[in-house]
Length: 251
Image (cartoon, rainbow, N blue to C red; front, side, top):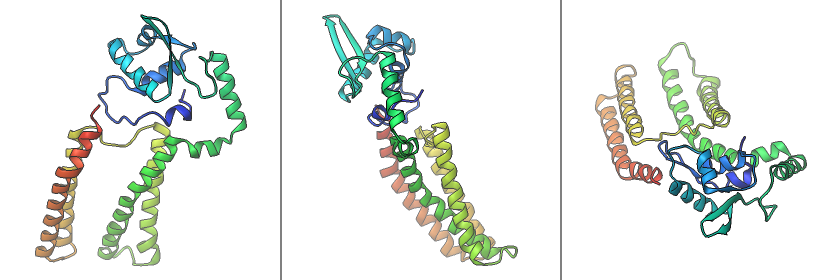
């Protein structure tokens, strides 16, 4: 059961794998349970058994600050939590919540709501930006293959059509995978980021050797260009990419 847009769009992004307990996990547990309100202990019992009450309370406080969860203190030691539905000032019973969701679904346009969903918007935005890299790879890679191969004549279909087909296939494919699986297709650890960066440096070295040996490019110019690009990237990686990534995975 997916969360409604009015909840999803207010939740923070959390790409960290080792997060003990996320706000999304807490609110999904409340949303999927067949009851209108909960005590702290009732929520904890439905979550991971090794999560402390302090951690659960902290996530509930965060959700309350975002306007997703509301509280109703009954006594000094008892507070009830419930999802703060925008169309009701009181805790909704499961039947009332289903009625409101059914009414919203009947009056809305499903396709339009799908396109306007915050997750779908984010996926399209991120993958269209990432597709700039696919376009560059397609243009550069096919240009080299066409110029060095006797089997691929230089026509409008090979010079322009193949790069466009490569860009479109990779872009549509990554968007489809993310929407169907919910996977962010992101590196989620510093070790993985280091490995990918190292792989890129090695792959660049293979391309430099290919240009020199197969296409007969100038060894001095090609090697110098490769070393310059590699050194520039490593400095940028150390000063910009790695610090931003470390900051994004901190609680």
